[in-house]
Length: 342
View 1 (cartoon, rainbow, N blue to C red):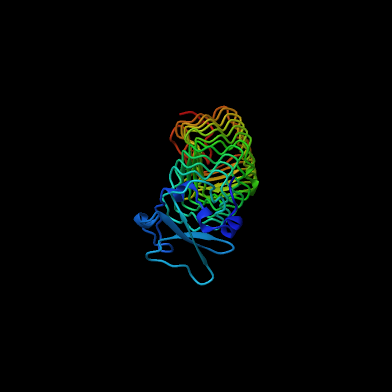
View 2: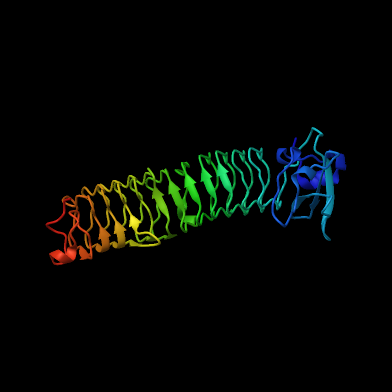
């Protein structure tokens, strides 16, 4: 039976136990903790820490003591028995926490920024409002974990099981997600500023009215069948090598970022770009069968190697466009009509 922190602290100190990551020693970096791996636990196998009503932290007792307002605690890392399961507010930034067992642990408001969490198991863990910015989460488990309002900005998450996890209100600014099952996610409450999705299935998801920020991506074999980007603003978003059949970009604004918005080598069969503004874009070697560009604006767009013959080009505005045959729209009276095949 696992005990909450409050009940553990009321019992004898020799009854306080710790989760697996502490029992085998944690490599903790960062100036705020200044912990040396060899000193935790100490030479007697004892782990030392400090706690308040809102946080717990582990210290090297040889070099650090608890501050005013904190209470010192210690426990024997070798003793088997009950486990401490409440690490709310724990401070473990820049830590090596790979292949650790966090199942059912309370880590709400925990500070784990820039830590290595690869291979660790967070099944059923509570991570509400946690700080996980810049973390590495590869080949891990987040099954049924609660990450609501957690900061995952610039995190790298790949090949990780997230089934049943709660990502409501999560900040994914600049994060990289590869081969993650997001089919049950509702993206409306998730911050997506420059988020990079690789090998992701977002079929039918609704990104309408969003600002995807700079240099976001849905590429490298991602599936976006029927995905809705109506009235979406993006800057240099990459959709290369992906399936966008029936995707909707009606009235969207596709600007350039550090790179042009690109659909190179992708399938845009039956996609709808009605009234979209595409400013500095690439559609090179792209399948544009029955793609609807009615009243779209092409400004500095390249169609190298693509076939526009079967696309709907009614009312299109052509500005400095490179046609499929590598000629330019300004050489043909500001149109590529008559030059729609490579």
